[in-house]
Length: 114
Length: 110
Image 1: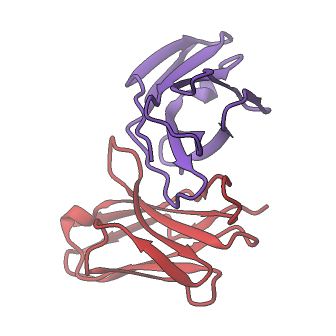
Image 2: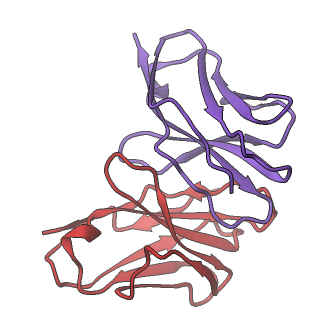
């Protein structure tokens, strides 16, 4: 079990730029989740994939955000035209599709928009 | 999914048991209770989960009341490395999301 891997760990960008984050889930897990966490708050759900299908999106996921999981393995989260309010930790998690399986999280990508 | 209520912070002496409570009075029959913890600058770490029976693993014990409206996570011998934010979450078998609240910030004191 190599765990959930996220890249990069840190990203500093200027307002208006586009950024893309990558998540590599645990290999046998077919569910993949993206969460966002701001300082002092718990993680907030953004979106969820079952294999390559994006099945659920939060209202937090504005039109500037897009997530993909093209072959049902790794996933990318892109933010276009970043704003200062996008500064947060972006967390990826994966799980098997057995009903009560827990989520296993990566250590996140910390985004700072200047 | 049911909401949970946790105290915002707790202290525990090193070597003593840490008992972290969680209230989930609106839990329904098919909802599991999960516990995670998060150390600064890391992702949440899964600890344990259960439906109605008490559970124990190498990290902790989970005690769920008979009416399932509350639970307690027990760290039997707290160490300084157990200082973290602990989240209690309930989720149904059919639910796709884990809703995190603001958790309990546990400080283990030497």
